[in-house]
Length: 207
Image (cartoon, rainbow, N blue to C red; front, top):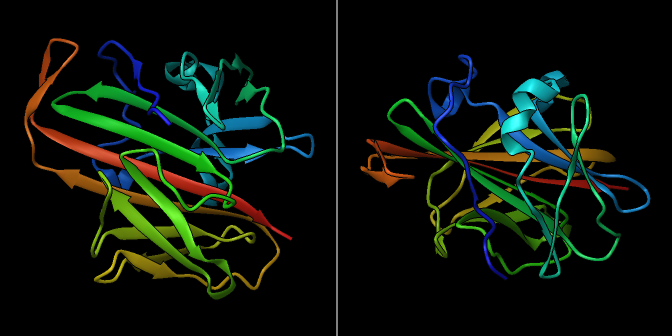
């Protein structure tokens, strides 16, 4: 499956983030019919930014079982016509000052194979184990935030195998966020950047 990168021009994010730790996240939720809602904000606070701020993602495609689909921008979400079959993913890169910020989001834990460059994937759901990969390699000692169904935020780190173990005893929606900063300069859309920030989420519902 190919990664989906939406090429956006350099924009000002209105002070939404100054570092990876302060970054808003992009996360996905699924409706009963399988449709996907993309949100931008802080999942643990129930903060969902409005269409003006979410607009930077409006041209991002969603991928499900190698099928790409466009979304429709709503007041506080982007709606994608996905189905119940298979996990869904989206990916967007944004320039902010001297930083290239890579937003990655996935919903669903039916697949163990990854396709995004920075992605959390299930290893053993019965044990609450997940693995974080960066460019296909295990991401060791990366910071992880878990938003529980009660909207509590738990801070963890991946181990030497890139694995993190979660308590999944609660029923409801979980959002796992991973963030990573790489001091790597380059060019994007003809503009220079000094560092790369990854903000990736894996969301799923446990019944």
